[in-house]
Image 1 (cartoon, rainbow, N blue to C red):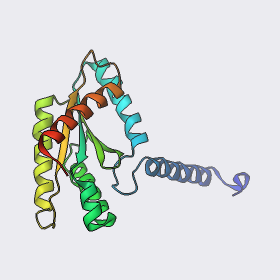
Image 2: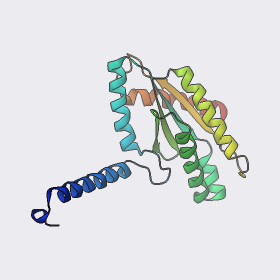
Image 3: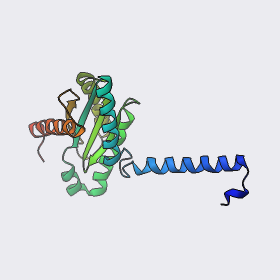
Length: 183
């Protein structure tokens, strides 16, 4: 398009349209195509930003590290399309039931990270239990059980980085998983 031939209003409209397109591209670049939640790259960046803000404001930030139990068994017995259906549903149910300021991202494979801003560990666990019950309600008719293992970690002064926080939550998730679930 020849910008020299445009009047001021046309040029402003064209630039705003391009800005909107760029924003959409940035948004979709940060979304996991299967689950429609944030992808790992975007989620980690957002988490890093929120950790910095929480530290500056001395406010709560709690994460939950989720693993979908027995997804390999579901894939092996019912096919990968069925496993994908489970992953999509997990992302959808959790995202739909989170508060506006909170977010979820797919960490990889069958793992997700939930981020709760301004909420302590106890409130986070209550909110997660509500989400988990919603997931169970929606999967009652499935031929198999859909369940999750979760580990929580709360940002503390001694926690130096985003990766430390994820590591603690991941370790807590594995403790819960192996106490309760085997494929």
